[in-house]
Every structure is written in structure tokens, then in C-alpha cells.
Length: 81
Picture 1: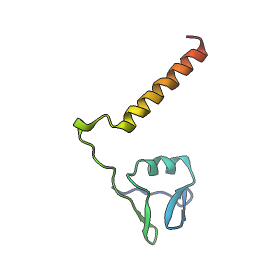
Picture 2 (picture 1 turned 180 degrees about the vertical axis):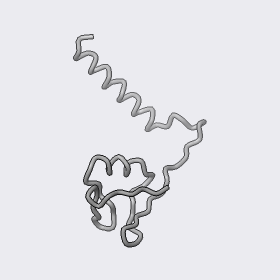
Picture 3 (picture 1 turned 60 degrees about the vertical axis):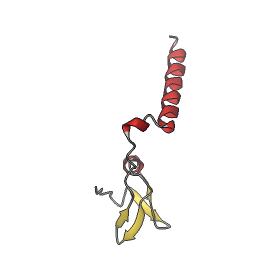
Picture 4 (picture 1 turned 30 degrees about the vertical axis):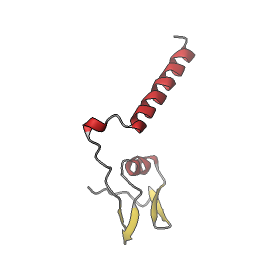
């Protein structure tokens, strides 16, 4: 898969692509690894690893779910529910 990120949205530092905008940051977060400069204006990143369904939810997914539940509970408590 290929992505086109405008030069106004990101810059290169030390051979790596650094996001300057929220849109570029969202795209780069979807990649499996940090994009590394390959040639000219081209960068390469490894795809996200495919996790078999039998191994889900992963520890990271479980932790994120717990944090989201706690955040929702705090928000509900602040609203007075």
C-alpha cells in the first residue's frame, strides 16, 4: 500500500519522516513501523503484523480497553451519573 503525504504535512529528520500535522500523524500511526527514507521523496515502512484471531485480544488491546472503560467511568461520574 502506498500513501502520499504532502511536504507541508511532514519533514525528514535523521532519515525518518516526522509528522507536522494531525492528518499525517494519523497516517503514520497506522503503519507497522516508522517510515525510513529509501530514495528521493520515498519512504518505506513495514506493514502491521497480522495477529491470528485465536491470539486476540492482545495484551495491548486488553490494556487499552481497560483504560477506555476507566476514562468513560470518570466522564460519567463528572457529569453526575
